[in-house]
Image 1 (cartoon, rainbow, N blue to C red):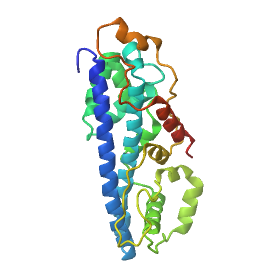
Image 2 (image 1 turned 180 degrees about the horizontal axis):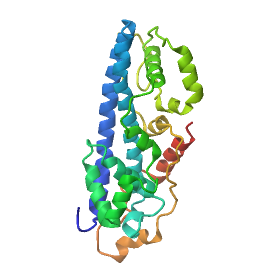
Image 3 (image 1 turned 135 degrees about the horizontal axis):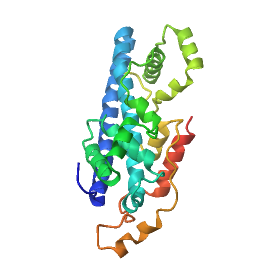
Image 4 (image 1 turned 135 degrees about the vertical axis):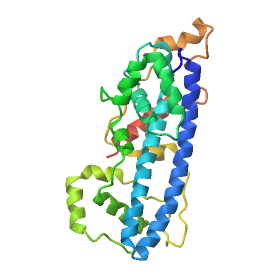
Length: 281
């Protein structure tokens, strides 16, 4: 771990992480769209058991993609609130969930090496014990949805059937699960599972015969926030940065001011996206 904290280095790593997360999401969504078409072909051919086995991979990849989307928002939040990091010695409550969630997820997502560099910077800033607490989620500050999405577990039968039903509908395949009664019971007793089923809207596949290859789309940021759909609260984002952050560049000859957010997401836009996440049922 580095012996000293560098705000410039941390900001660079956060920006690199945002870019890496966007590329991973695009890659995973493209691959999943191809697998969905193959699953539709299996259902049409009556190979239901093979489809149920293969759809588990689609479910886990969707979980992982949703986790990447949330982490991207957290990284952008920290970039917009970088004054809290540079000017305050202790982690401010306004960003502690974002910081702890990024540290927690960084040890569980091997594709994003930048997470390790970010963790080291937070260790240099707030101390090793702070990082250990985040990794163990001792204070329950890690986003619960991230914890759920990154867990390795076998999808519930209801979720498997729901995925296959949505895929069959999207590709105009005449297929329905045999255990309709089980599905009804699962819906009434496990409403939260419905939130784990991403909508197969026109932004993912065209509702056309399965001979047509579904076309992915470059989702806009606001569409992405709506797709995340979570009932868990995200950290509050107060309107004003610490006053000291606005004068950091004029009072010292150090690195670039924390408030110089050139090229960073607009704070109002980030706030709106987090509100959209919280309102989604």
